[in-house]
Amino acid sequence: MDLSTTLAEIVSLSIDERLSLVEAIWDSIAAEPGEPELTEAQRQELERRLAAHTASPEDVLPWEEVKAQALARARR
Image (cartoon, rainbow, N blue to C red; front, top):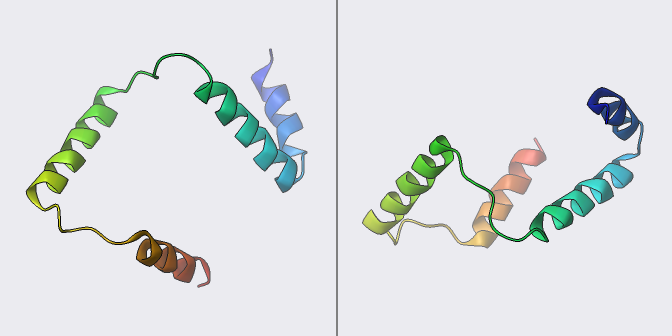
């Protein structure tokens, strides 16, 4: 498989078609048995976030607030 040719074909798809492709790829990955291996950097970041949450479990935002902030930023 020639990745550059494949990527050129993907870029020629519409945004909706590319989103459908991403979804299909993600579904195929999720269907694989087992879990993907984390890099050391990913593992450290997860440990950092878990420690931060353990230290301050009340320091969270509701999903609705996070979503509203993200949408407000996207409209700028």
